[in-house]
Image 1: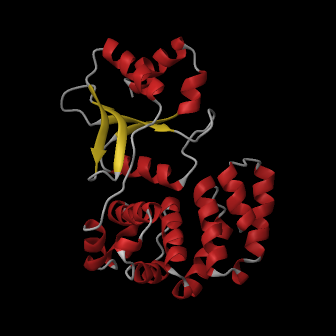
Image 2: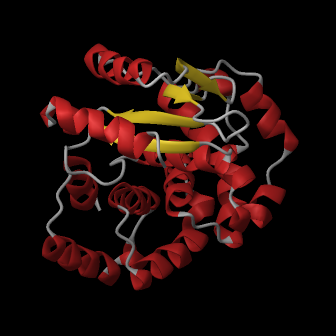
Image 3: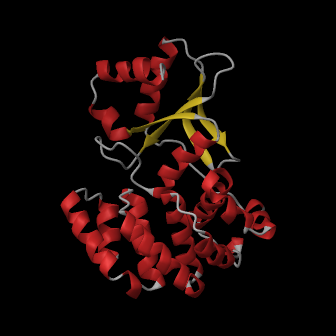
Length: 261
């Protein structure tokens, strides 16, 4: 499980490697402790490689050992399961019970964001209705009443200036740093292409490779998914891809892909 998480975090994309590792993990699922299980689920959530047999075995094992989990293990599992869109009721009943024991003042910045993302997934995902019904109001109140660390605007001024310059030339009104859900999320550049149309935005991937087709971490993956579920039309773009594009490619992306979708 530690190997899987390390490989996922490093961005290993060799399919044969993952097939072999998934098979090895499947063979030892019943021996996995809470920490091992949390690492395995987080690895799958990061890569978004989801072999059915392994996922089913992990969910069964999670139902068996969720009651034994420490808070950080339960949170990691809940966060990963949200990114995988897995909401089996037996497992979530124990995860929610464990999360309900949290003390908001003791949460790290990352943990606070993860709890908020978990609760938002339960609220927005149609398949999470049963799990959502298990969430006590006291947990929601504790999180809502705590300090919200939330998101940050893209820290690459060059890409912000580049996109904004092209939008200005196209006569498109936009806003930098659109705040969503009380600051949980920041849309780097938000705009509307026609009056009364749905809100649209750009989210930049700061740590993803130029060839990435989706965010490579559960936080960014859930962010883009949640924004879509909240009614936003969001375009995700790795900063590295923008940097290697020519000026012509940049303008083509903004004018013919971003503004016409």
